[in-house]
Image (cartoon, rainbow, N blue to C red; front, side, top):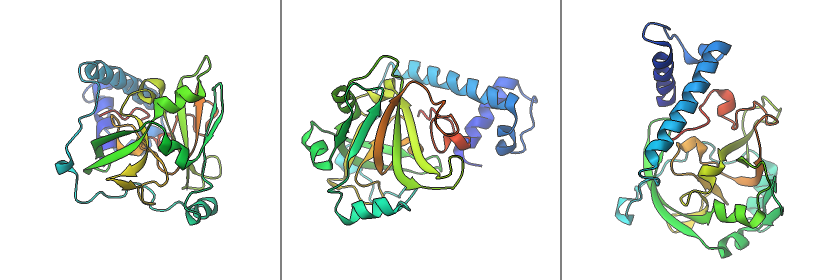
Length: 258
């Protein structure tokens, strides 16, 4: 059982009391509406508790260049299974544009060169994967909050949704397109960046070229790679499984704070 499922096991037992459930498999529990409701309420409690604690130390720890890991495993997809992405890669991403839309005053379509001209932030942080491994790397990119301010937020804006080039399981909406989301609290955190560089070089394909999200206070599956589009929304109700992310629609927690 993964670290993620073990944590959910703990939350269920804490909520229902010792002996309340004999857990034989979290995938089975996910199919029960009553237990699913407990999981969601426990997740909300965890998010509120972690943010109260983080108020005393709001940033993820940053390291020195001497701490950078000699190797950094590729998390998730190594190469998007997308003809459109392959064409963009073949052209050196010259034709790639990051689209920003939804509940914004001004829709944007930013090239990689334009993003690199904006004020940047460099940070050396630890990536914690839900599978149990960690690695430290240096990331350089544009603060997400800066891009959102350029677009301007309309009333009702609450979440930022990230759509990616990689297509995984042919389920739910029929495409299995990878997506993720965070709320505006994390979106405007100074360490939340749209990264185009890793360890003083442009991102490799395996690590999410040309652009990936770094939201340093959450687990690795929230760090969406191969970004293509950002939408600002007021809810997840119109999105596939309605839980705000590819893995969340399959049972993972939406708030993966560490």
